[in-house]
Length: 394
Image: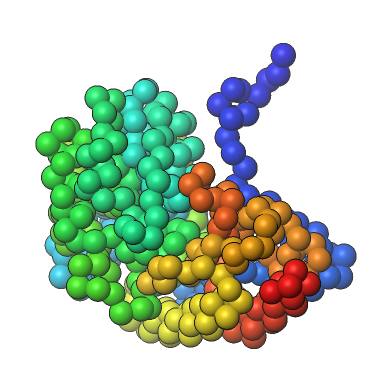
């Protein structure tokens, strides 16, 4: 007999957090660890944003706000979309406790017990958990380099069943950094709409695109292609506000009232000081800081990709965005991804995330590297991996 629910016992660990925890333990012992595991910008939140948060605290802006966020922030987010040529009514914008809060709310709004939701494999691991906690069934669909690790309309049609309710997409995606294609998005949205289903696009890494994208790839919001798609975004990644726990989603008109009710019940309102700090993050001087950091991420990306290629890692699709490289282990290494990551951190002080954190398909042969640390640390990490692989004859 146990007090812990069957649902909780079935939830897989978020392995990147376990890797980070082990890295912190080694550092506490005096070991040097190069962090290539965690998807968190190493930059501090921009100073003007911090000041806005402090000002909000000093002004007593510490009470509950509206469940969907303060009007000023919803309007400012709508203005940002307008600056990119997309018209969004501020009423359709719900401010949330990070992108995770948005995903938690929207799965409750959209998914009934036993509904199936189509997800890419590999993909962001927590999406399946969000679906399951809403009573739904995540259906993982294998994707690979041939589709740039993205779902396609053909794959969705082939896996759609009588129980299917919708599709989760992401661009740029975690762990692969690839983008959704415009035509495929339109086709998937049309297919799902004809069957009473939804498409949800995770755009948490929007703004973090580095490589020249192809003409078919969507570098801006999906709302510019399908206006009534569900979109999730956050102030965590591009805006560098991970610990502030503030994000948003854009929802169709007919889902606003249900989204508000669910938000009221799950967490009442997003944190007030974080909302005022996020409002400041959208000003032009703050955007200039974010853009400079994006440029630095692009430089780090290039250093990491070049180094991984020289070490024999397989990178059939270069990441166009986010801050990850999803790579196949060198041929002949004869180690699983988890064994490789454990060996690398314990013996050489390099923290990397195993592919098993992101699904099943090819997971034991892949690892994810994050270029969220300094160029000097990336170079050091590559040097340590060169030494490690040299002991295995590479």
